[in-house]
Image 1: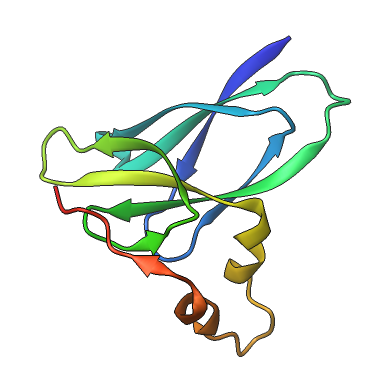
Image 2: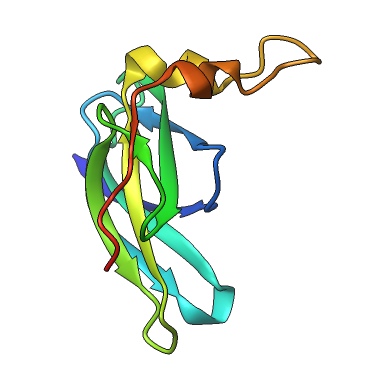
Length: 121
């Protein structure tokens, strides 16, 4: 059996970390006006024996740069405003770059990445 769960994502430089079941699949994203937030719907196996994974997702505005390795999953539109929110999956091998190593963590990891601007819509 499987089910679909809804998760709230926060826009910004820091990705949102979700604990998901192995074999998950993102099925939809949407900007929910009353909550003023982007939500992600994810299909997952329902079996309690399925291992879990921690995955990160980043929400950006149009024109914000993201590394080439990020995978665009969907775009959520504000139906009453000019904003578009783009949902990207952070590759599992890059997730550690966004986790603070110590209290004095810096943005050095970001400066070493191959950042590319996205098209402005």
